[in-house]
Image 1: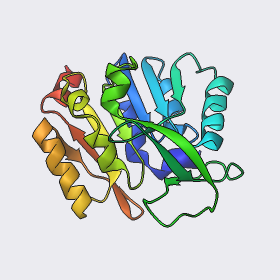
Image 2 (image 1 turned 135 degrees about the vertical axis):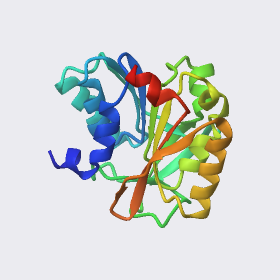
Image 3 (image 1 turned 120 degrees about the vertical axis):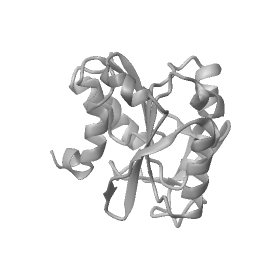
Image 4 (image 1 turned 180 degrees about the horizontal axis):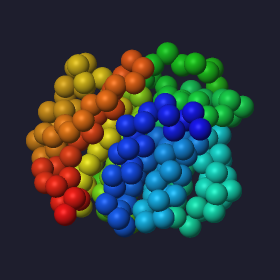
Length: 211
């Protein structure tokens, strides 16, 4: 499956999860990595996808693979606070990486409204399970997503983040600084295409996984 070989470091990261973990897939698209994590059989997955066309395929893929009981699919976007955003999206073009208007030049003239919540709100107000591992793959909104979770990210249960970003950009430098202040450090930075998947971990979290 080409989707599994495109970003092998992400697959290796998922395989390193400690048993009985909770994994948040933020920007799940149609669910490749959410399903891979769920297929471990010992992980609980929460998959976030705000584009309706991709959300349908995400939920359908979970059902087709008998994983609907292990994956909570949520039709919601993540951001710095509660709001309504508008995505430049076509419901006739599935599996694309769509963006919210204002973050880039839109690829599609049509739009879709989407509910946006912060990570802190999801856990504290809606009772979503606190994650142990979080993957963030949302172009142009990564900083806002992390800004919306200071209390969540400070919790000891949150062990690692896997973030697609450009480390040398001004936004990337702010993200690294923000996460370092919470206690995260970069443990790997495999590159693919024109970007990098940075894995951030709290000191000791990986050593504990090996004991």
